[in-house]
Length: 133
Image (cartoon, one colour):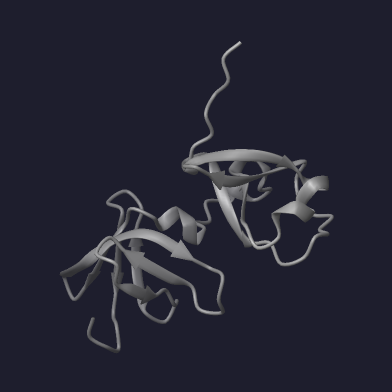
């Protein structure tokens, strides 16, 4: 019997595990190990302290309402005043400020006050930044 490999597009990062009890977790959570996502039962999360935890997108109740999560913006190009700033390589939600890391390694705070428009079809985010990158 073959098993499907879970990809990052199938999952949603819920952050880094800071406590070992959460009744709201689905039956399985995932941790990235050696480039692959490994499932763990939610009842066994004590061994995952400090790890980034992922859940299946299908386990998110309101995924069908069209709302984008920050992680959905990976791969989007950011432009400021029609100048391309870069493409989002990863999103970090582990701090109070959500940060986008661009492919060139620069980091950019993603704040609703900076975002003018998001074009999902073009995979583009138009921003107006109060600073120069």
